[in-house]
Amino acid sequence: MVMVPFLKKIYFFLKGNYTSFDNVLSKYVSYKIVDFRKGKYIVQCVNTKSTFQTSISDIIFDLDILYSLHPLQSCYIGIEFAFYLKKNNLDVSNYQKRIKKAHHDYGIYRIKYQDRKGDYCYVDLLSYEENVEDPREIAFSEIKISKFSAEEAFYIGLNAGLKIIDKYFNATKKANVIPFKKVY
Image 1: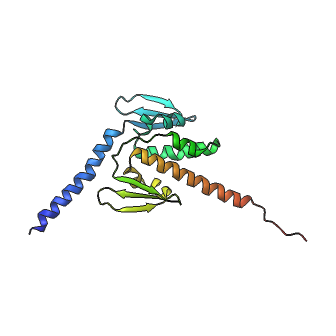
Image 2: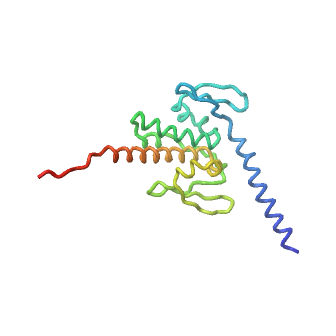
Image 3: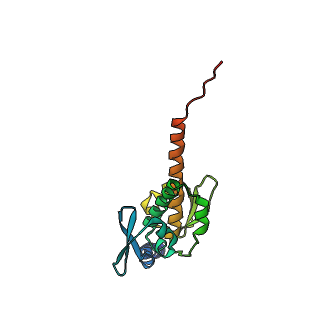
């Protein structure tokens, strides 16, 4: 049969792309967060195994560290940064403008756009399939977030954190509202 060798080629091509993604990812991941103590993150350099303490704002504004984390940890930093902004009453749009976009395009998934509801449309670069999902669903799926680059994972985490905070604060506001009673 002519189809069997053709299907084998497709199988090995796809298998090679998925296994080589781990190799490509390991080239870009050079830092990892190993611990959290007293408001400070302990970050380890993968190559030298040296560790250092840093705050979340230092990680955010040192793009070498932020974009050299694994996408899972980068997403976590995005969620934590959203809570940090809300806790300190800082303007989110100011910080989103300051953070420059690097070009580490090693992910299998790529963000195409964000709609008005805040949902992301992302494209699978192997099958060119488009998906639209809430950033919270992407951020809490370990498999999905691992297939983005670290910078895209950070932005997904930041927007997921902001949505979590908004949902929480809207629920507490509704619970604390005293209903208006008409007095004659």
